[in-house]
Image 1 (cartoon, one colour):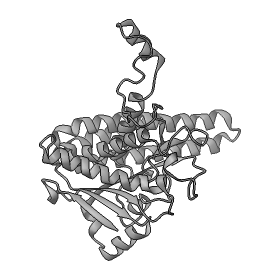
Image 2: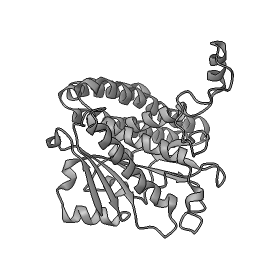
Image 3: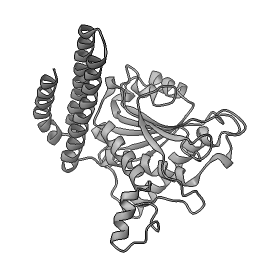
Image 4: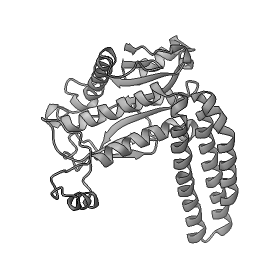
Length: 329
């Protein structure tokens, strides 16, 4: 396990951002996970250069980059340093972030949501960044037509804010937020007793994984760059968060939470509408709504970790979640 630091200006906050990628795969492992380990190196190089040249300020919190042996070296580290996780705030893992998405029946760059038991406003930071990158690098007919009406020739600007490599493809960014899964390096952070919210980038499907075909011909510099930038944005947003940014975090968390609870309510009502056992469907629906409210309370409470401005918002937002839950029931 190798570690590098971008030192924060306020390291005593005890809220380090940890980025991970694993190194132990087979000889030909360009995507799994040489792409992840290379992405950390580029993030560290680029941010350090920008800081040293005065183009961006030094972040408040430490950004730590870990090159690991998948899962096992983190568990060993936490076993050897049983209090180390108290210094950590969030984790982003990069596992398979360079795939050419046109290969292998159209791959998807999956990005996990947090598990409900670890829900945190960080989940909404992750989703916001992924949505920004997807929308900026997807061609939409309505946007193209609107551009044509303002004098831009239809089709000349493929994407609204393109992030392309000169040596890569011009494919859209086919990324999607998915439910939590395990089996890569973020899982060790989410596990008890560590309990540090962690997410991962992992492309799928991939028939070339763990084979001699996982080689450089399978890697697209454009998708690689988009995933690197997305991870760097997530890390930077969290590392620089302060009182001034708290209202934006709160708006994302509360607004997206309302949408999530609405989805849970839709599921509960669909059971009640379609199942013959109405009593059973009702009780499962009630549990679904209560589960959703409990998950969103975790996210709201995590706003208090931002400092006094976040803590001040928590009670009123919790009350609003309680009221929403009551109306749904």
